[in-house]
Length: 133
Image (cartoon, rainbow, N blue to C red; front, side):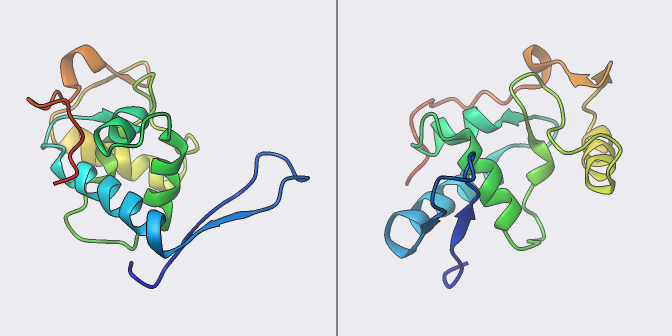
């Protein structure tokens, strides 16, 4: 990931595209990937929770962008990240959404009406401070 940059699409066509380069972007992406890698089997985290634990509060969309841009790394549990409502954020019925659901079910995470019960399955790290070490 050292030579890649994360490119975020603007929410409005009139806004210029932002490209996040070397200094802050790679550190932020690395922090996000460290947090995602720490989510234990059978637990889930929201995009916002991952952002907070990475020391990037209010940057849930950046978490999604980093996960989209991340290379297919074996062992990176991307499937354990859900939206704040406990739903898969990928398009319903897409191959990636089916794969995410399959992986979570294989870890014992249950879906009820398309949602994961966050009270039951949410990851609660012992130390709620940023995982930047």
